[in-house]
Length: 287
Image (cartoon, rainbow, N blue to C red; front, side, top):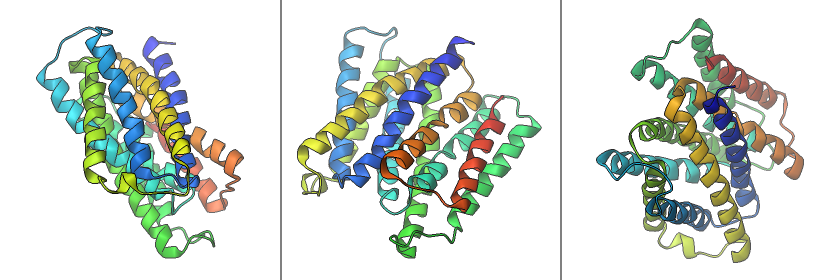
């Protein structure tokens, strides 16, 4: 097993656990804006300490600032849209849709970095589009979730997918051109700043969850993401995005399994088929 593949597998584990906390945040009724602010501020603060302390090699450059800004804004959009989508759809639908961003990131990698795309990778793209169609057109809407809210959740998940694609591609460029801790520090500083600016009033609003619960969930998400994202950057430095993006994209399965166990969400037949198709799409995209 090559080092970058092992690093990607570890990133898969940590990011899957972090993704599950998106569902925990939504189910506990936490303030989305405040949870995002705590989560991103923690990663930014720790990354700045490690960067300024010389934990990684390399110095500040324009690429670090550029990709940090792009990644930070894209990641914020993906995180907030995902948490909001999960208020209206089940984890099975939400995670399956948002994780299709890995397919589009892989396609970009093939076009830009000239990774060879075989027939089975092309089949993966077709299957992935089928998942989007199936989930968006699904008739089996849970009774406790009105149809209008269901459609809103699907739309939010699709926007989260687009933002996730931008975040994945910018991470690859940063892994090749910038100091990793410095990139993470800038990226999450932009994310935290944007979250504060966009929700200057909302993050102070009360919620059904206690402030302590919101902080606990936010800090847990931050710790898991700090480790998982750094491992992802290490893998991207030497490994192909067309493989790593689909591989780490499997982390949504960890979140779905945990959601099924903890919150007893039982996906219906259509959703099970959609999940299976999403997994097949990711596997087909692997080189």
